[in-house]
View 1 (cartoon, rainbow, N blue to C red):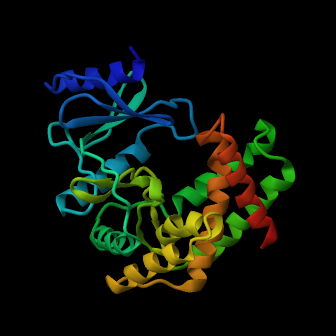
View 2 (view 1 turned 180 degrees about the vertical axis):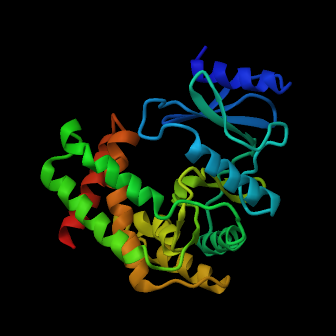
Length: 287
């Protein structure tokens, strides 16, 4: 059996929960596996990756627990396990309620609204989160990129320059807890409605970062301005506010962050992913 799954089952056994199935839902940087009728384990498979220790996983679990408690539109943590990050045999993991996915198309007019709902609940999250964490983490990754041959020196300099400029602009601005990686892949259509998931990148920053994360692909890869407009309008109609200039800097930083993480997230990328990476880098070069 996969050692990640064995580790998750061991943690369940320790808490008196018996796994009665093994249904892999996602197999990548993290393994998502359904182990009971109602329980899903999410296990970090890349134990030698850039994120070591449990601090980031503890932040995700704490944020998710807060959102679950206040009935936010999120996949909830599972009630049979302590609401904390767990670790066994070097594998970090947490446990979630199983939800049934549907084939329904997400409504752009609802996406901005439920993001604002999460932002409002997160404003009252009392634990400190690192400021602009993913941007600073990405800068550290880029410092080693030339030696590891991820990108050539000119591309590394390009990504670092845009990141540093964005950090300089964003750091002094009002900040609050954010999702941190609020792209469409982390938004599930379920029988319980549209739910956010995957809070591992949660950090403190301007709300425009989450908006940029949602609209980047639609705006620059898919040429779907209608989707962009509807998301931003629904965020405002729900009571949210954003600044166009701050959003622009977040779009730039988002492109740099995603580009830098590609070799880590997709070590054997498809042709489609290679094309998207090239488009992001070319977009940054053209600024």
